Image 1 (cartoon, rainbow, N blue to C red):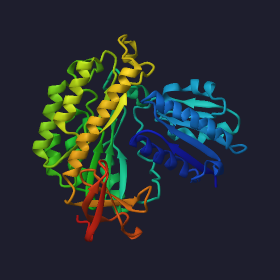
Image 2: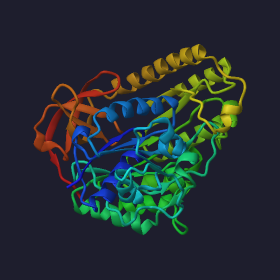
Image 3: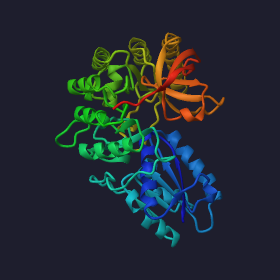
Image 4: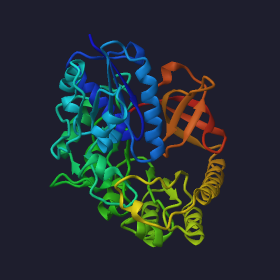
Amino acid sequence: MPRIYIETYGCQMNVADSELVLGVLAREGYVAVDDPAAADVVLVNTCAVRDHAEQKVLSRVGELKRSKRPGGVLGVVGCMAQRLGPRLLERVPQVDLVVGPDGYRGLPDLIARARGGERAAEVEFKAWEHYEDVPPVREGGAAASAFVTVQRGCDYRCTFCIVPMTRGPERSRKLADVVREVTDLARGGTTEVTLLGQTVNSYADGTRDFADLLRAVGSVSGIRRLRFTSPYPTDFSERVVAAMAETPAVCEHVHLPVQSGSSRVLKRMLRRYDRDRYLEVVAALRRAISGIALTTDIIVGFPGETEQDFQETLSLVEAVGFDDAYTFRYSPREGTPATRLKDVVPDHVAGERLERLVAAVRGIARCKNVGLVGTTHEVLVEGRAKRGGLLQGRTRANKVALFAGPDAWIGSYRLVRLTGTTGSTFAALAVGQELAVVG
């Protein structure tokens, strides 16, 4: 049987897309392998959000081409493939095919053509494509936790963002199709589901909205935890917040991208809220959901950002008290409106601001986490930690705890008492017996 190796970069949506690619190729008899040198087809699933991500992929493709088997196929798929298209074939002669996120269905034919010496790019947007008939092949088979894509593309036009150009226009799956997939997962033993979309809480299938989706998925028998990412702040309607509060499976954690704490910068980014509106959303979530943890994305050094603007970002971080944040220096992306802004922030200034921001975020997170030491939480045991031989579990509020225990606990729910923290993760001690899955 032909062998396929996929290496995935970027967001959770790319992880889910790699599972779709494996599903497409599994129907043609392909089997997944862990070693690119043993594969007949090697695919790199890529991210295009920042230039650094693309440079990392180009470097990795250079390494992979050296281990390419005689007659083998090397392809680049995903967002970077969509952005560069045929230019990538010209730039890297060893790449045989380039396929965007809407072109995975055609991979078997493109691979066959590549084996015949034809190099090709498939980057057409397909507004109808949801891969409903393609069962994803998830890593390790059935697992306690799974990603489910409910929405593809984005209609928002933030001036810094490449996603609308790499993922196409927003479209949502039918609610019934999502519920069917989640039901199948639950029957196979999955108890935690993360709903994925570029602006996931703007989900609308024509008759149902995100509030309806949360209630429907949260009521599937066997689903104990429900998460979603990434939402857009102003799409948290009263209906959505109520659904979150009233659906027991919905976890007490929201990743709520802010990008900047300055209303002036947010306007230049073409975000659809200002500082005050963002803080109103935070307050609404906290009123509705006791103990909710909030994480975020923040960009520093956006064109025109002044020291005063940056101070407003620091003060917002303090005011919200984020549990964590993904922080980045602004990365110009070809074709986005922000590249036309002239008042560029010097690299050394952006770098110094990033250092201050990281220090502020870490300080707040550490204080919050220290306050949790000694408390007891339910965790889903995800597997072995990368180092130390301990098990890794995650609380409903998305806190990671490391503790001793046997492999037999993986995939189960346990109570742990948090005994210490490094600032980002917790040391813990398992207490009591396995928590039964109810519903």
